[in-house]
Image (cartoon, rainbow, N blue to C red; front, side, top):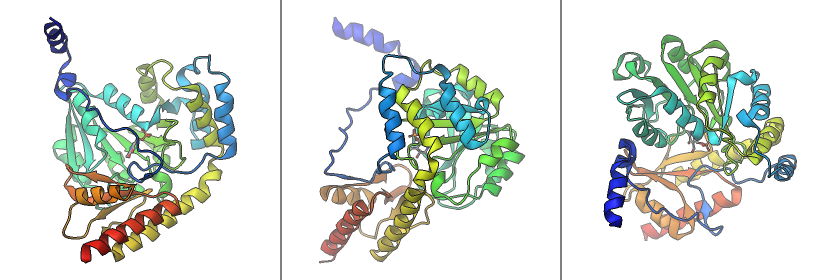
Length: 364
Ligand SMILES: Cc1ncc(COP(=O)(O)O)c(C=O)c1O
């Protein structure tokens, strides 16, 4: 009887939920004994003033957060030299990315993105019953503009560029991006999750082009991944439509307060950004000496091609046995790579010590 009812309910699922099936049980978050270098967090404490803002927000726990995130949007508008009508705020930039998919894509539509790219996009496209066109860019520091303008991607409802890109770490010049935005009448979504570790950013383009949406997050360069704060910046006509389909009270009061505080203490993070960039170069140099191929990175992670003899999965397992977690990408043509987030000096020393031990052990 239960089975019959359950089957009946499951058969009522909409197509994407049917196709995706149930979520796998997953794994609990690793405990503190692990050196966690697999999801590009920034393992530094919040500046004291920011931390205090979170504590005082807790005293208002019985209130709903401000609707439409007006205070937070005003703070972001101030920080980025825009008006609050140019800004929508969300629980991380991934919530806003999902909102863009929901706003622009219906069944049968297509969206184009640079590949390899942020894999979450595959699920977002499937949920809209839309086609994801992946335009191969490998780790080239330029974008194939013609493919986006004239190839199958020309009819895409929007084009998604992550700059710097994840998982390659590649940075494309803002001039290149501007050429595409200027020549295309499509919406271009420029995801700048890692931009504070890069030499330039696309903020100035928001002022120039109505067909650009810029995504920013406080998860990576502002060490607040667990607080979940992200922004999308763009023309008020587009932003207003996104705000109108957003969940009510989508953020919480701690996210709102920490977001405002981080935006007014951005200078406090400069030392952190310098540290990450220096560590990134130190680790890249050492990895090359151990026989890894490391492409230049403009992010807080490195994509490293492992030495001949084993694949990325093998290295992932070997490092995990030593308490180090890194990311691998089985389905992106990157099966001989591992991605390593850059953390504290101690974390990176532990990682390098483990790599040295594994390499030494291999050679014997
Ligand atoms: C390219 C890119 N965009 C967006 C995100 C989502 O970040 P968040 O939702 O934490 O803002 C990530 C996270 O890893 C990412 O790599």
